[in-house]
Image (cartoon, rainbow over all chains, first blue to last red; front, side, top):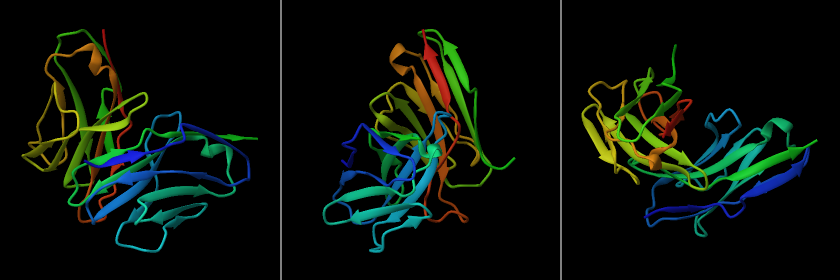
Length: 114
Length: 115
């Protein structure tokens, strides 16, 4: 069975600085997607970034980028120029293909300090 | 309005009662999913559906029933609610002609309390 591990329950960063959230996963499959979702206090799940396993190039979305190491089964999220609005829970998630639902990590609570 | 909606947003019920949580999406996504979120566990998959009349179990299906007679609706029923089913429930949809990548989009969640 696939597992997703986020080893940092809580992190904090100063506004405008850079922070990296860690995620490792375990799977025997070769075709899958990886995601980072953000959950602010409103509880809404918001997609931050997506990575296709077959793509070697790391995904980027504005201030958010990933470091995808397929052989190491590692998928970290880097947030540059952190903003107060980035304060939230961040979940790493794995989805195989064809879709059978996502497997989530336990989450990392990120606090951006002014 | 386009998107994915859940109702009710909050529900309090008693042990042993039947409860149905509703989920509706307007994107014509093929796949729909139900997750529950508990402290320390992230989100866990309860059931999913690949299309109308096709459903399958996820990681934690016991005590839940689903149906999908129409593509846009995916209700989740707790046949006899237990305190351990107190949780926040999220519905999600994904995969369709306009979303071939499979990214899942989530509803706002339903907070269910079983007394």
